[in-house]
Length: 296
Image (cartoon, rainbow, N blue to C red; front, side, top):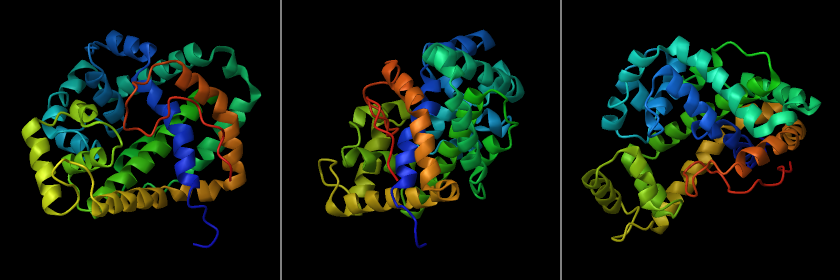
């Protein structure tokens, strides 16, 4: 389409992803999870509960389908057990309380900035422009009622947008012929993160080796697990397609207003990244320092 800025969707993802993802690392969120009765010695019991709650009492196959990179065995260890601790409706109410507590801790007086209300309106407009056809996790979040306070609206909009992108990324991986474990092996192969980073996804050494062997037989990686030229081209195509599938909300908002949203959210982005909550190595596309607001 004429006029599309091919980098806008990716730049806005880098800008908004941490505003959503800090939720899964924040002590205030773990406190809410513990109050509900979830084990919090690791983040996974509450992670699957929080993230899948918009789907309703989903079974392990459905949650595995939307949380594409996780081992089905790992998901089954937490779902449907999560719903016996707290049902989805109770979880969603607690999720908003947790978001509120988290941002009051991270941002404090910044939540009273008039610019936050403008940012919330812009982010909500972008989220409402996201076509959720074929995107189950984005659709489930988009069906939720909107909260009133700007920082909560902003988080919910960022959540719809990141799940919209994530559902599109799954479509890109499927189009490329990569199963969940192969997706991780190929990502490690281009040096996106060390292979050890992906151990949290629950795949065994044998499963990882088998996926590596399948990719090697297709010419995606070499004997050492490093991406070949074909593998790098394949991953580039996946990222390009993911960006194109994420374009719609940002083209609807327009480059100028997307730029304005980026500028308005920069203080919250800085607060999220400077809190020291994110691990040093992630696969989320999160930088350790806040970038400048993206330019159109």
